[in-house]
Each structure stands twice: as structure tokens, then as C-alpha cells.
Length: 457
Image (cartoon, rainbow, N blue to C red; front, side, top):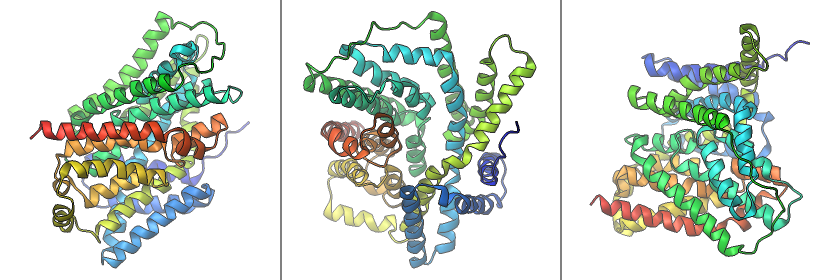
């Protein structure tokens, strides 16, 4: 039986990722227009294969961005700049795609999932949130898909709600500090003077506050919640524990180490590390007593799966390219230097600006405007010198509110995925289940950002 043919759009995506890596070490002016042209070609080939919602959002964002740039007399420059910048996000998606397949097939990670899902009702919320937080912080969506097997549509409605909320909270909270999340890449792109190490410690603190705050909130509301009669908790063997720590730890150390030593961006470091790491990981899991031939066969299978699956990233490409073009286009109409005096006149309190910033991102996300769109736009028209706060304080605030915002967005990838797994409407999750806790948590994020700002004065 012959393997299915890899489509043209997959090779185009692979070429864009390669150009993003080459751009780091090669000073060639042709990379920018070539990457932009290939991105347009990928969208043309895949746009009609995308679901209606991301297709509409992407087209509207790109159209609005180009219209704004044309009105500002900078259509060609803004279009080329926006399309070229988006290759950074495409590289990130490419890198993460390599890790998802071996993560799902890893026996050690399967054992870790069993530990999380077997916990008794009294501590299952906390274990689920912390477990998916730990796995997701390195494996991204693959970590969520591992633990999401604990969601069973036959559960009592109250228990289904609690477990789903725990997974959403644990997974999204890692976006406030993990370098493997698109949130970190977007914020560092929007605030180019910022480094990951400057915001990660405070982001991790906010994440833990959110997870444990959610656990306490759940305990207060469901002190006598439903019990589903699960058996005793499973323990992780010493061998599996070493393997889990080894895989997650080595991947994190490699990526962060390269970022800090080579002073390159997180997507580039991931793009360099993820493919060989995933190939070695896959080869190590070959069944039985594998030979070099069987290991090579497993590695070739992974390459075909990853490269052949690149067109499936069309939804992310549409939204992120659209957001980038939109942000660049609108910035041609709203120069940052013009907003400073207006803010000083109508909103002189910098603390109040931070509060409006965090709640504004969440409110826009709630009505369907993904944080990536808002954060890129903020980076273009409201840089730190205009907002009046240090770049790292704004970065921490944006990262802290990012994950919470996706919890109340019916169109975020996390909400849509868990809606599909649980059989519950994405609108029910986003607009009924999560807002009470989310807006309490955003108030804490706002207060934390204000405290951090005053600590530097």
C-alpha cells in the first residue's frame, strides 16, 4: 500500500518555515518578499478548506488591514511587512506540530495521564489543573489532549462542568509564562524590547495564583459536589517518572538554553530543536528490540505525518496572518505619537490605563476578537512609552490576561476543543461557566500589574 501523496500546500508551508530559520543567519533581502508570496499562495490553496468562522475572520482582518493601509497611502509596504512578520507564527505552529505525535504515543506520558485522571474527587480539580498545566507548558495542545481523556460525556452535569473548567484553567494559565505558547511569542513580538526571562517569573506567579484561586473557588461553590465513584489513585513508577521529567526537562532546557545563549527568538529556537528532538523521541519508542532499520522507519513515518499534516494548520494561519496584517495596516492610520497627548488629556492615570487594558482585552475576546488581534494592535499603536508603564509590566499584564480571555471566548482553540470533547456548547462554557471566576482573576491581574509598576518607581 502506497503512502498518500503530500499536497503542494504542505511543501509551501515547509518552505515558509525554512525561510524563517534562514532569515536568522542570512542577510538576504529576498527573504521578505519570498516569504510573503508563499504565505499568500498557501492561503489561496487552503482558504476554502477552512471552516467558515476562521475563513470569515481571516478575510475580514486582512481586508480591513489592507484597506486601512491603502487609506494611509502605505498599502504595499504594510502588506509586505504584515505578511512577512507572520512567518514567525507559522514557524511556531510548525515546531509544535512535531511534538504532538510522539507526545500522544509516549508510554511514560500515558502513565502520567493515568495518575492525573485517577485522583479521588477531593483533589481531582487541583491535580487536573496542575497536571495539564505542567504537560501543556511544554507540549502545548498535545498536553491538553492527553489529560482531556478524563472528560466523559456521561458524567453528571455538575462534575462535567468542574472537570472541564479545571482543564481549561490549568492549560490556559500556562500561557502567562511558557515559551512554548503562542501568547509569549505574540507579546514578545508586540513588545520587541522585552525578553522572555523578564516576564516568565511573574507570569508563573500569576499562573499559580489563578490555578489555586480556581481550586478554592471550586471548593467554595461545590463543597458538596458530585462524587463519581472513581477507584484509588494510580502511582507513577520511578522509571516513568524519570522518563517524563527527562523528556519535558530536556526539551525545555534545550529551547530556553538556545534562546538565552544564541539570543534568538523562541519560535526560531523551537524550529531548530523540535524536529530533531521529535525524531529522536520517536526512534526511542520503536517497539520490541528495534534495529536501526525499524527506528529509521518510525522516523520516516513521523516526517510524513508532520509534513503531510501542515495544511491542517490553515485555521491558525488565517487568523494569525489576518491579525498581523490588520495590526500593521491600522497602525498606519493611528500613529503612536498622536495617542500619547490624547491619553494624557483623557486618561492621565497610568494605573487606570492598566486596568482598562486588561479588562479591554478580555471584553473583546468575549465577543469573539481573539487576544492575538488585540495584542498585535496594541503593540503597533500603544507601545509602552505611550501607555506610560515599563514594557515588562505591560508584558506581564497582557500575558496574565491572555489565557483568562481565551476561557471566555467561544472561538478560542481551547474552548472549541473541550466543547468537542465534552459535548457541551462552546457558548455555554465561554459565556455561562467561566465569566464569574475569570473576571475575579482579571481583577487580581490588574492589581498585580499596578503593584509591579509601583515597585519600579
